[in-house]
Image (tube, rainbow, N blue to C red; front, side, top):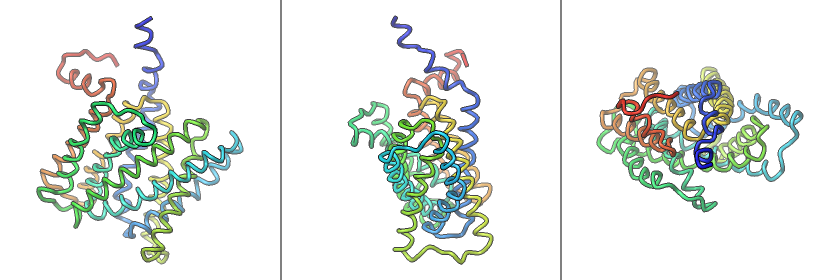
Length: 321
């Protein structure tokens, strides 16, 4: 009886699904390019965020309508929560786009991982869900890594305001965690709707970005053709393809496995920033990035995933997968 409770088959099957792993890795790889695409558009954060959402809705809206005709519509309350999650997603886009311009795409994507701690904190504050000892211990480690990545000991050729970029990237991660918390509740209630929650959240993000842009000086329309081309690529890849793939992948994986695989996103972002945009972070900034990624990897294993991986490397535990 005890063995059956502690080692049920459903907990192992999702993490071994190669299709889910492939979808999640593909989505994370596509997402790693978004910071570079934002920089290449040459647009201000509000303009890039607004058009990213609007252009994505050209694809998402008819796709979501077809999904609703096939499976029925979502409940009005769920639709409202999805729209509200989009407000937080819009805040994430605005803050993160500015962080990319301030600190560079690699650093901005790494500090965004503060959402790994922010999400359980929000769940604790809103729903009273308990935080594990591991999550509490990771908070100062993550903050220290973010401070190093932000250039507290000096910054390289990544952006003009690395410290401000690290702070804004951290705030973006908190907003992103709020989006994940609300969007997760909608997806759990309507499991057959893969695209509809993304489309509704994108509407909320577009409205939020549009309002902030209008108050702050307007949304640019007379952009050069090259900027429009990069915005279209950003919308289709960073807002449609990546999130649909990640949503499909996480549905078939345990949370720890999904979080661990998503580490490919910040790692690739740093590498792409150095290769494509000639970003040159200092050694201390790279150490900060490594600290953040290591802390996220540790948090990704609530059942001991990180410890088992470390022991495998040391040769103390034989591989079984």
